[in-house]
Picture 1 (cartoon, rainbow, N blue to C red):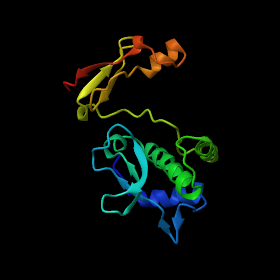
Picture 2 (tube, helix red, strand yellow; picture 1 turned 60 degrees about the vertical axis):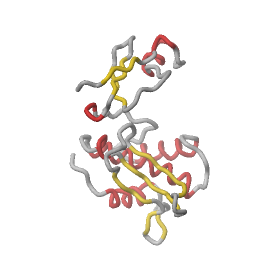
Picture 3 (cartoon, rainbow, N blue to C red; picture 1 turned 180 degrees about the vertical axis):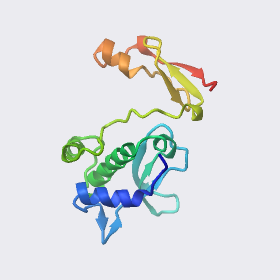
Length: 180
């Protein structure tokens, strides 16, 4: 699906699910933008800090390569997920990642509408052509694209299925060069 401007979606979700709390005088408390194409491992991120020149940084960035080929619901769910992070940080002034306040708001939003789902983790397909490595699970033979090799990663599905969710060396991923 072609990318659409994020700011109108942000304002709509802010009105519908955050009581307008993510804006002051109609201006967003965070910058919202599409990535420049380098964000390929996660669908979106919220970050706050300081730039090298001393200016404040507070932004939501959505992955252009990951979300562009997916239905609009993926963009809405990802944007709303990142907006919950911004709401917990900027409105509640609480330092938590996916803690109780985040989860409560996520559940409220999911119950309130049927257009999209907010989840803790996405399971969107990664663009294989953009990845340099393919991580293969020796147990289930699943294959996942990665930009770089990582040490000690195990197949989450097999660890959950075979070892009660605990990391196990029998599920270590094997990295192979991507020839696609």
